[in-house]
Image 1 (cartoon, rainbow, N blue to C red):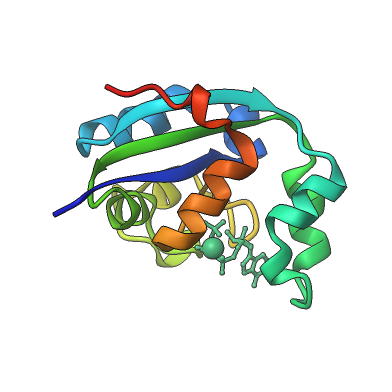
Image 2: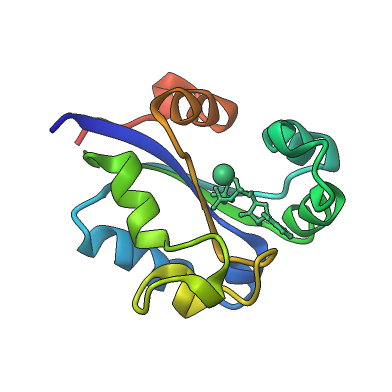
Length: 141
Ligand code: ATP
Ligand code: MG
C-alpha cells in the first residue's frame, strides 16, 4: 500500500462544539499522522471555489453558508492508504447512515452539518491540499 496524503476539514459546527481534538484523536488512532494544520474562516468565494463541483446542486448555497458560518480547522493527513482510511474514519455523508464509532456518527448533526470533509481520490486530494497549503508547509514525519 502506498503512503498517501489527503485533506481533512473539521467543519464549523465541530469547531464551535469544541470537538477538534476528539476528531484528530480518531484519525491518529487509525494510524494517520498530521503533517500540516491551521485554522481559518473561508469567504463565500473561497467556499464556492472549494466546492465548485457541487455548484449546480440544490444544496450548494446551504453548503457555502454552512462552511462560512465560522472558523474551520484544516489539516493534511498522511499514512498508508490515507485517502480511503480518512473516508472510512469519517463515515457516510449522512450521519444518520454512518457506521457507529465513525466521526460523522458521533459528531455530525445532519447531512449538511456532517462534522468533517475528506478528499475522495488522489487527484482531488492533490488539488485540495494545494488549495490550503504551500508545499513548504507540509512537514515530513
Ligand atoms: P465531503 O465532500 O464534505 O467530504 P462527501 O464527499 O461525503 O462530503 P459530497 O457528496 O461530496 O459528500 O457532498 C459535499 C458536502 O455537501 C457534504 O459533506 C455535505 O456537507 C453537503 N451535502 C451533500 N449532500 C447534501 C444534501 N442532500 N443536503 C445538504 N447538504 C448536502
Ligand atoms: Mg465530497
